[in-house]
Amino acid sequence: MRNSPRSITKLIRTTVDAIQTHYWDLLRKRSTEMEWSKDSQYYLLFRVPLGYILVCLDAIKTFVESEREAKKRVMTEDDKHLVELMEALDRYRCDGVDYAVYQRSNKYSSKLLKKTIMLQKKLSPSSKFHDGRSISNLQRAVTEVKVVVESLDNIPGSVGTRNQIRKRWDRG
Image 1 (cartoon, rainbow, N blue to C red):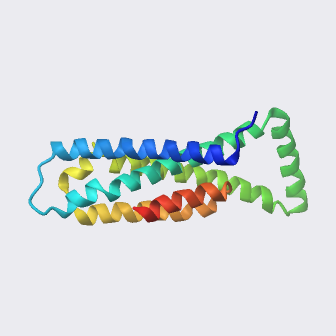
Image 2 (cartoon, one colour):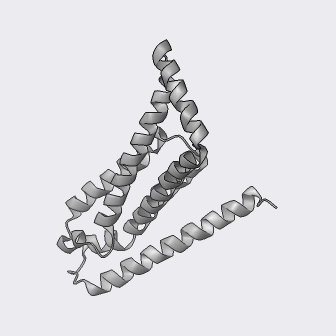
Image 3 (tube, one colour):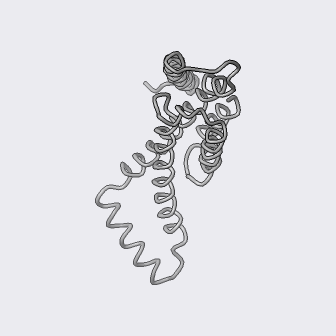
């Protein structure tokens, strides 16, 4: 029996909320281990918006990985042979635009996944990045995350997933 779209949405929200709680717990624990000056702006940024940012990065990573896995599942050996034949035909006709777009989206999603993982490591609560407590470095990193969030439009896939990621981003 298939789950209804409503139950799937509820499951996704519950999972995202659990991930968010996990990150906030990590941020809270790490913030107690660090020394803070009075009225530290970095402390406020570290405790609240960073949790949303880490959830967005986690969602982007999951989204891109699932898109890549779906493409791999679709491509059986027969499909690969068919694609090779289509490539040869497209080269002959010189109008292989759709396949070229498909290839670019695969390369783009790989680059996006690498960038997302790099940002996750960089902004992780346990990262040495936070030891300097530089607001300008944090702003640059957040700008990089914003570029990643905005670049989701270049990946074919679920518009609903991209919209959910953007809502989480806007909330932070």
